[in-house]
Length: 198
Ligand code: AMP
Image 1 (cartoon, rainbow, N blue to C red):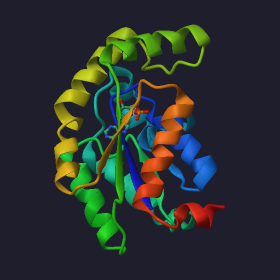
Image 2 (image 1 turned 60 degrees about the vertical axis):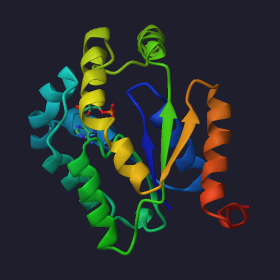
Image 3 (image 1 turned 90 degrees about the vertical axis):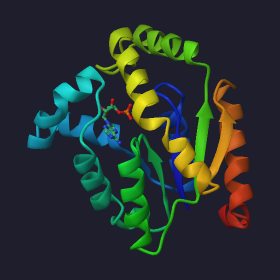
Image 4 (image 1 turned 90 degrees about the horizontal axis):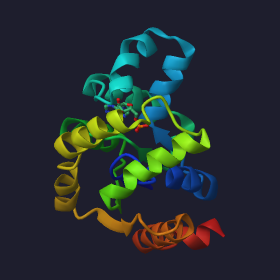
């Protein structure tokens, strides 16, 4: 089963994708994590994208599509994956559909984590206080990340809605409640998955 986690920065996509990876064995494919790893390793790609991440702008479609194209052919993705932070633009979503279709696969479910935007700044401030923040977790960059989200990424919802794939989850609920709602959405879409997991 291939799942897209959808929502603004700070909605909880990464947290829930990690839980799905642990509980369902679907690898979490986070382009943000992969780009940060490239930056930390000082690779040519990392050097190319470092300033873009620091500002909260989008890396080119070509780069992230290339990363995902390579990643989905790894054996751990054979049963499916959770896409976290990808796709972020319509061309990325179209490319992902094509990549999957050529392998006889598809996106089964898009989980929209709906949150009140005022909470996002609070969450970033909390991460800074707890020492779990990333270099792009600061109020100025968050403002840009939100603008980029509204402009480039939010339109994807209509793209996936047309395909009848979107399930909206209340991302303001406590983490455990969100996890439960996600489990319900997955099992609703994939009868038999739960019993198979048991
Ligand atoms: P994230 O960890 O998903 O919030 O991503 C952190 C940063 O990595 C973003 O602000 C972008 O600069 C870059 N990035 C991650 N995924 C993508 C993507 N699918 N398209 C373009 N840029 C991305």
